[in-house]
Length: 172
View: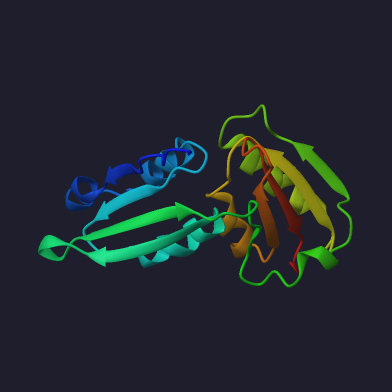
């Protein structure tokens, strides 16, 4: 019988109480999880926006209020393959044209992959698609693409070591 892996516990209440932003710490904790390991998050509020982010990374959640109005959220890995995350306006990425630009950015440190993707996107015509492979999920890239009117879809590869993203260029 396989033993259950103990969930990793991350208490972001001290960060929140000091006025800090715990998102980076949470994403680092998720990155450090063993395959199949869950994450228990302790926060000063119900972290609703995080639920969608974690769902996009392949986690279900159970949230419950604990002492003093704080919240405990258990994020458990879903049992299926890495789901594809998409921008809100990305309609059926499987119907997009084949990429006209391919970038392998796995050897670059942030913010270089984001800089290169945004520069490459500027050079493409509306409707064209860019494909890139990165060594980590480009969390800060997503809002930049959305702000510029581009659509995106991405996920981790089977090994969980590379993030693949398709960007469809929007109207200028």
